[in-house]
Amino acid sequence: MNYVYIATSLDGFIADRDGGLDWLTGLPNPEGGDFGFAAFLADVDAIVMGRKTFETVLALGVWPYDKPVFVLSTTLGGVPPDLAGKAEVVTGDPRGLVAALRERGYENLYVDGGRTIQGFLEADLIDEIIITTVPILLGDGVPLFGRIGRTLTFTHVSTETLSPELAKSRYVRDRARE
Image (tube, rainbow, N blue to C red; front, side, top):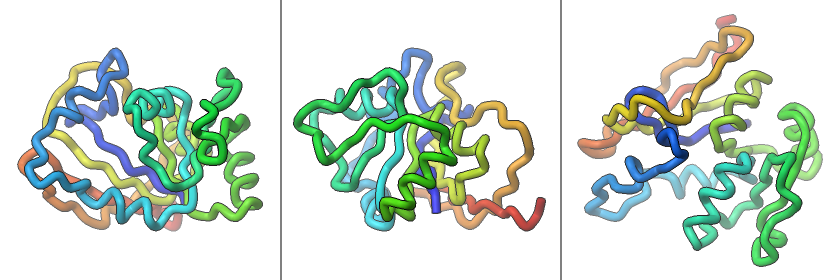
């Protein structure tokens, strides 16, 4: 299974026009919880992310993942030495990458990053999407969804109000309805 777990603005952007996340990281979180993200990560085998997302994570200064991370990039030559064994740069199309990762024993993949998610959607490789919506209009930025060559049908499974600022919805791919 391939999963997307991501936050968007009300108008569907995952980052502002400069790639920034201040609109997201500045949200109040009085209880300091992760709103279910750790439980989600516990059920995945590996993470596939794009270069820009990888660079955003690196800028945090602390590596947050205890799962293998595969960075989809044609421009990165490698990962920083302190991430050897934790992250790996990979290339190729989503279908080939998924097949290669399955051969290595990684069945449940968390797919992250705008272009990476869009590529996986274009290849019809996303089985579940979990979107946390933040009630802010950015007006412009990095969109979650881009143009794909066909209609992909999903079934709404649930929506949970996490706080006055966050609503998390879960959608499962429904290939039988197409």
